[in-house]
Amino acid sequence: MPNSNTPVTVGAVVSAFLESCGVKTAFGVISIHNMPILDAFAQRGKVRFVPARGEAGAGNMADAYARSTASLGVCLTSTGPAAGNIAGSLVEAYTAGSPLLHITGQIETEFLDKGMSYIHEAPDQLTMLKAVSKAAFRVRSVDNVLGVLKQAVQCALTAPTGPVSVEIPIDIQSALTTMPADLAPLPVQPVVPAAAALDDLATRFAAAKRPLLWLGGGARHAGAAVKRLQALGIGVVTSVQGRGIVAEDDAGSLGAYNIHKPVEAFYQTCDAMLVVGSRLRGNETLKYELKLPRPLYRADADPAAEGRCYATDAFVCGDSSLVLQGLADRLEARDWRADPALLADLRAAHEQAVGTLHDGLGAYSALVRELQQVAGQQFNWVRDVTVSNSTWGNRELRIFHPTAGVHATGGGIGQGMPMAIGAAIGAAETNSGRKTFCLAGDGGFILNLGELATMVQEQCDLLIVLMNDKGYGVIKNIQDAQYGGRRCYVDLHTPDYAKLCASIELPHARVSTLSDLPAVLAQAAGRKGPFLLEIDMLSIGGFKSAFAGPPTNTVTQIPALSQGGRA
Image (cartoon, rainbow, N blue to C red; front, side, top):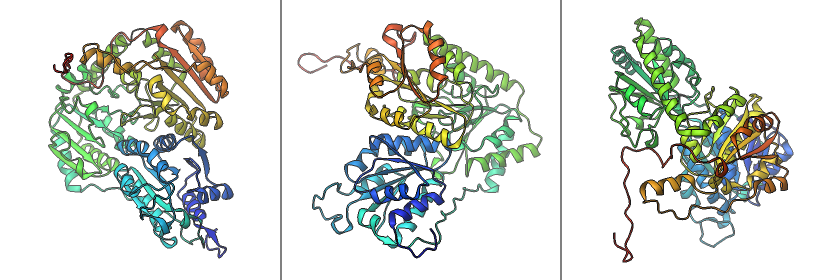
């Protein structure tokens, strides 16, 4: 305990500090190079440790936990190969802007950085971690461990948020010290926008009659301010990361239907757009060629966002909630209102986009409707990179809370299922009442198959919808569209999931005809704990419209090679 003169390990100091940060759960894999910290977790009994089967999965769990609870995610790994294993998960967290603290062990200080091929050492590991994290630090002594951890947590939680890695050598972890008196984390201060910049933005915005807000993940906490602006008749569209800031049944929102042709045509009837907390990522802007309304204004806590991807007509650097509150104050004072016809036109564009999407799904439109019905409004919607997510999961099911949607923003396959574990554990811990639904494809699913054991062991309240076509469906479509139908390396040997699930005591059902779906889905969703619902796509058939990779304005055909190796 603080102020005690009783010697404790540095591992106990780490545990106590995390407790003071409000951390209730951490994820990771136990190792000889992190055991002092995990021993302290067990002895103190305040932080739950979820033992993943691999560091990659553990990082995804911590990431999704952070996103779905709007709090700090924590992951622990060993050094060397283990720290390397989490790199992809850190890239995903960095891309999504997830506040994540990654604590990794390190070899003994005596042997560190001496090129002695010491077990579990990775040459220049700190540089590797810096490349895949917002920042990376090394604890150099017993005396500076708490200071480094405080700096790391503050960095992770400061906008633009992201993953931060901390190396703690094993000899320092196990060293004895006294518990520090001050374990409080450092304050996290929002970026306050300049009043003059807000005045200028309001003047520009008030000149518009048909303006839109584009909301990204950096605006998740700005819902109250968004509602004030919606009350003035301003329309809303979101990035995939911004889903749920406005409930997706709201008549004044396009949801994440941001690149569909009817919506792009609607943009051209608008006379201003304010992009808030969004990177305007390439796959959500047709590789930056999506025709957005002009003038285009941006607001972001990251000053480097100005002019990035799209030329900016005006920029405000600041916390998204503070910017939008400031804008609402100024527009309300002017008694400004948008053109009443704007929202009717927005609704028409939305309905046309939704209709086009459902038509392209063919028979699978019924799956979307049934899933929405059983999920209701209180659920987490976690998706892997798969044809189904790219086709419909990133826009439907409709979600109703800014932390309810989690997806693999960076485009890496196989991360959805461990993400769903993190979200389910977060839902149980926070008593949110949300059941977690996970959409996955068989191609990516097998990458983290071992985490099914974690899911069963932790008894996560989680329903996995596994779209099984026994191959890389989207790659097949790309090969058909761009490579003359030359298919290679896309057919996969897939487990018998009924037998696999039985072996690990995971409830399972397979749907081979969609007429059976309502009853099976109701049974699966109605029970607590984990469940794997396998959709047999080979029996049901494909989508009516084929998805062949991220939308672009042009498709290049790759010619076949002659036997001589020349086109």
